[in-house]
Length: 102
Image (cartoon, rainbow, N blue to C red; front, side, top):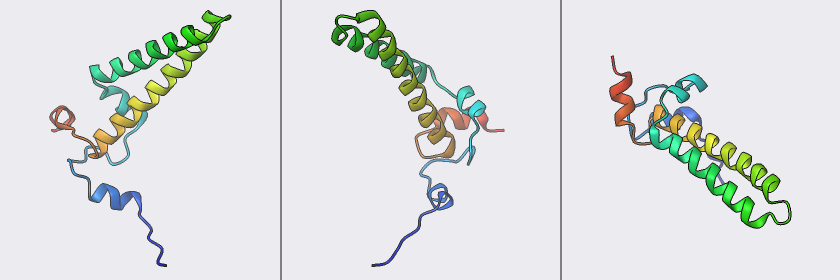
């Protein structure tokens, strides 16, 4: 049974889209977030708040607030992942290529 080691360099070398930043920083990811990314954060926060409110009896508001915090955290992490992948060329990144091309 042969061991196969895949490195980050192997993945980036075979990226299907142009690589803008091979190791994007947090600031680069935040500055390249799209409107739909912010919508994802809002939707995950709102959906989690509704879920917490509906299932949180008898402490509906504290449960909803906790669920909304968890949903916002999940949304932020998903946006960070999506923008990182676009900047590394692992997702479609036409807008980012236009924005950062010199």
